[in-house]
Length: 90
Image 1 (tube, rainbow, N blue to C red):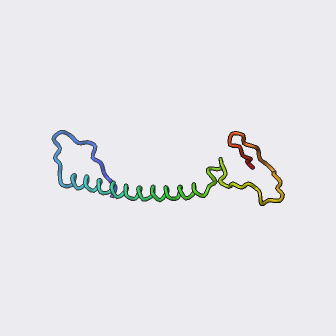
Image 2: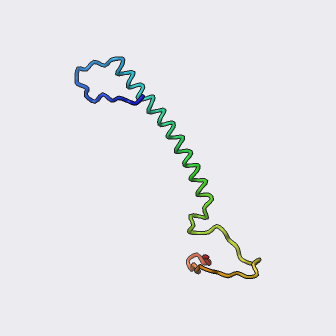
Image 3: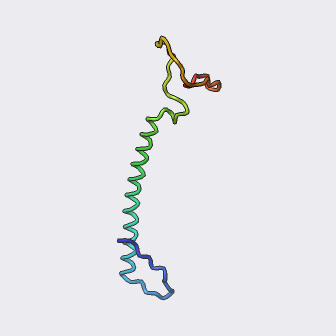
């Protein structure tokens, strides 16, 4: 049930059982929706952490490190020497 707000209260309006039940149902519905949203956010956080863990450090620094001692020949197609981090980025 969607919450039906009463926004035209006046000073001497009586508060009925219907009003209180409507308030309580609105509170219960809001808590139920918060629980669903919290589960969704938790799921998205887990998925994002998993995705980030599979990326090579945001593509700004590659986690692949090799001294190339086992390679007999290599042809670099693109890349540059990063003087700040003292590495070849290809």
